[in-house]
Length: 89
Image 1 (tube, rainbow, N blue to C red):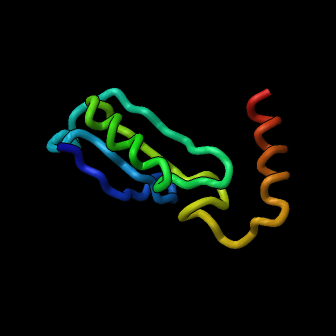
Image 2 (image 1 turned 90 degrees about the horizontal axis):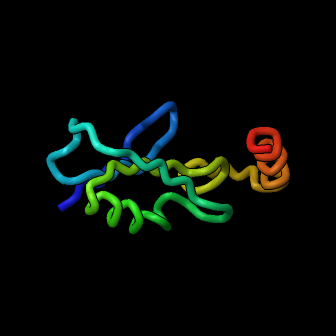
Image 3 (image 1 turned 180 degrees about the horizontal axis):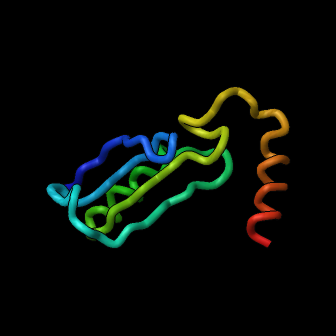
């Protein structure tokens, strides 16, 4: 069995999955960050599978996706790509 819950982390809602009864147990942790045009809930089945394998899983939504969508889609992809270029290259 696993536990799934929504938590507030660093000012944002994340999906938190872990083996049942292990909320305060040190576990290997996976932060699963989805791709464009998706959300944490679309990939929640991965959280279930990984938690069943003994991992703690944290799934945030990307900016302007899922619970973080605020209606500012126009131009957001270009800004996000520009930020990604600066951060990852």
